[in-house]
Image 1 (cartoon, rainbow, N blue to C red):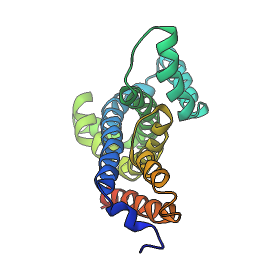
Image 2 (image 1 turned 180 degrees about the vertical axis):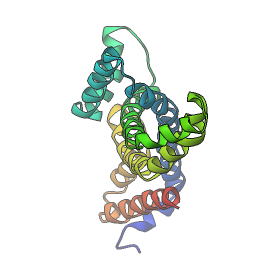
Image 3 (image 1 turned 135 degrees about the vertical axis):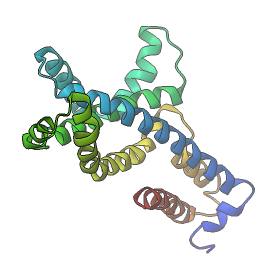
Amino acid sequence: MQNLGIDVLFKGTNFVRLLSGLWVAVRISLISVMISIVLGLAVGVLMTSKNRILKVIFRIYLEIVRIMPQMVLLFIVYFGTTRVFGWNLEAEVSAILVFSFWGIAEMGDLVRGALISIPKIQYESAMALGMDGKQIYYHVILPQTIRRLIPLSINLITRMIKTTSLVMMIGIVEVLKVAQQIIEANRRSSPNAAFGIFAVVFLLYFRRFCSLGG
């Protein structure tokens, strides 16, 4: 255990600090995911609109999200807004804004794809039964859409959780940042600490994904 460097975690409050860093990453990802799911559903419905202006706006929005790396977006929101607009955004708020901006677009596109994948016969059959537009969406379309969205949404959520590791670049002390601090502080006494500590971080992430999948 000592050769692997895991013993470093049990010195002082190192393990507690690591768990605190994990909670920071979990908090950012959970808030971002919840915002993305709620607003993404609405955006996805709007993406299926026949209004050409809305289609162009959401297409540009989606392309910006897909082309622009999340790290660049983090720098623009956290550092750029402070200098250009004079806003004093906290690092966590900036991270949530960026991940939500990204997640809403991706979730919206998933919802759009799920909606247009439902055969027209489903709408026609519901109308033949005397249902109005709201009833068709609530009783026929939404249940099928949600069933199609579940596996795709889980994939998106796992990507968002993994991407939260980028927040250390704007000074947020999350689990990876704490791990680096512990390794640097114990570099002389435990030169192999990096292996053991990052192995523990891997297990913590793995547990989060298993909990999500389960």
